[in-house]
Amino acid sequence: MVYDLSATKKDAEKIRSDIMGEQDAIIQYQAHIDESKSEEVREVLTHILNDEKEHTAELTKLLRKLDKVQDEKFKKEGL
Ligand SMILES: [Fe+2]
Image (cartoon, protein in one colour):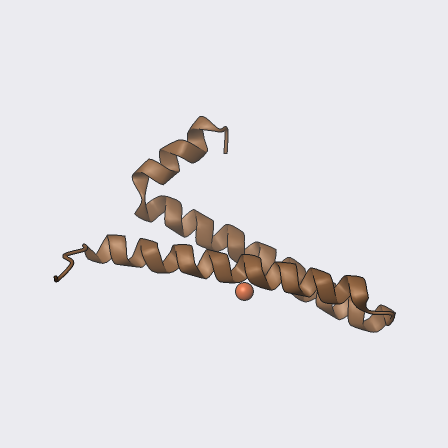
């Protein structure tokens, strides 16, 4: 069967997958930070971890533009 998703729906699906990737990265970096005894390592990884959080926010903003129902749900929650 051929799925006839619009380009917007396909983009939204990919963005959702990208958000999951960012969240997985955050979890992994946090675990490495927690395990490291090196202050330098913890500092660099914390900087990278915070970048991943920014990426999550950027992707979520993009998803809200692509999926109006999702956008309404965020608005309903005061976001
Ligand atoms: Fe990222």
